[in-house]
Image (cartoon, rainbow, N blue to C red; front, side):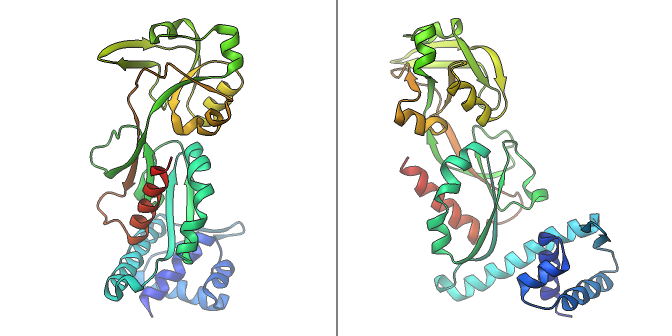
Length: 294
């Protein structure tokens, strides 16, 4: 039994959810896939897949083997690329994670050139506003914003942008335009609980003003924050990235532009205990260049 081939077959079965789909991806017959999985289970002396009328489900042992087998094949591919040098292109699957709104606005629409550069590479995009366990989720690299709470993470900052106070012209027509941060608590606000909360410290020429937004509405997803602001329900503090298109069109206005807030940081986060793959490193370099132009 070719163990690497069997691992590749098993990984594709788990990813596609069926023997037939895996066979199509691998360009082999379905009986060959079934035989390979059976041989692998016999060799390991453990059941890897549960078969039912609803399809295939990895067992607990199967999930653990899936992650390690995937890592083994990636490391083998890395060794091959290192031996061949720069002439070897990226291939396989790159699994990335990012916040929903940020990825929808700034990453997903700009993946075309990266994929064109690497025609043998495919990308799985996991959109999630919460920070999942990268190893358990099989993530190669995650794009995360703000301060990193887990100091054990392998991460590097790849970009940052300024935070801004924004509101629609309609909202300002009803409530007035603030001229100093200390006026903000008197105005209806939308508080983004994952983006810094209600407490903010503004700085200008050495002067500081600390304020607490009076938020009658709190949201834990950027999509909800955007919709609330665009519906004229309140002003908010957010990264410039979050409202870049609307600011350019004048659909929302930046307030208190002569005051500064702590910048929003963008981090590339890699699974702890693993060397970043060439695919992950190339993607991070691409995103770094992409965000430098924004």
